[in-house]
Image (cartoon, rainbow, N blue to C red; front, side):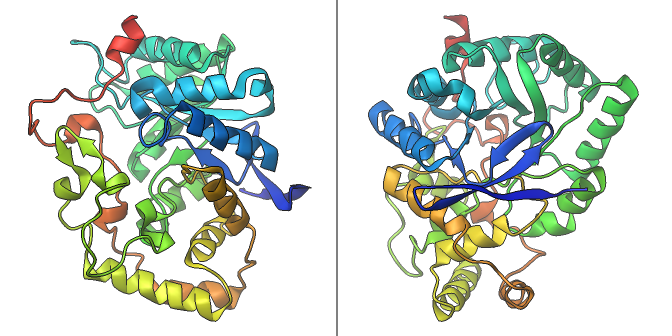
Length: 365
C-alpha cells in the first residue's frame, strides 16, 4: 500500500511534504541535478543547492553520467557539512564501461559505486538506481552486488530506471527468492504529456507497493509554456543538447509536433481559467498521485527552483479537476518529446566522430 505524509513543516512559505521510498523519507519537492556541469557551472549549481536547503527540500537526484561526473562533484561540494540533512539519489549503468565489462555486472556495480562515493564526497548513497536495464547481465547478479553494497553500509536503498513492467516484476521475484532488498522505486518518464505509465508501469508498481519517481515532469520545458507552436526551433536548453555530435531535436524529429502543442495549449487554458499557471497544473497534478514518491524537476536558478517548489503545493486538485484534466490529455500516447533520453549505447552511430559520454576516465583517475 502506498501512502504519503503531508505538510510536516513550512519553511520560507513553502509547505514541505514528504513521502517514503523504502526506509527513506524524502521531500516531494526534489531537485534534479542533471543541469549541473551541463547547462550551469559550479557557482550556479551551488546557488540552486543552497536555495533548496533553505526551502527545506531534502531530495537531490543525480547520476554518474550527468555532466560526465561533474554533477555529482558539484553536488557533493555544495552540500558539504550538510550532507546528513539530505537524501541523495544517484545512478549507474548509462555510461560506457571499459571493454568487456557489462554495465549491470557485479564488478561494474562496485566500481561505479566507489567512483560516485568519491565524487559526492560521502561515505554512503541513500538511493542507488540502475539507470537502464542491462540485457547482457542477469538481474540476479546486479541485485546480488547491490545487496552487498547495502550490507557494507555504502548504499541504503536501491531502485531502477527505464524498466518496463515485466522487468520490474522479474526483479521483484528474483529479490524475493534471494532474500535481499529489492528495488524500492522506479524512475521513468511520467507527465501530463506522457501518461502511458498509467496503463503499463504504474499498475505493476502499485501491486508491488513500489512508488515511482517521474523524470521530465515538465516534459523538457514543454509544460512550462517555454516553447510555442510555429516558433523557431530552440537554440538553447535540453533540445539543443548535443549527443554524439547531433542535437537532441535532430535525433528525435517528431519533438515539436502539433499533437503535443494541442494538449499543452488546452492545459494552459484550463490552468488560466482556474487561476493557475501551466507549471502549477503540471506539478500539482503529479504531486496529487499517491504512488508518486517525489518530483525531481531540474532548475538552473534559485528563482526557478522556488517556482517549481511552490507549484507542487499550490493547487489542491479536486476529483472534478482530475477528470477534466484527464480529458485534455492522452493516456495511450508517449510523445517523443517526453520519452526521455535513451541509453547512450542505443543512440545512432556517431555523426561527427565524437566519443560517447561516459565516466570511464573519471573512474580510472
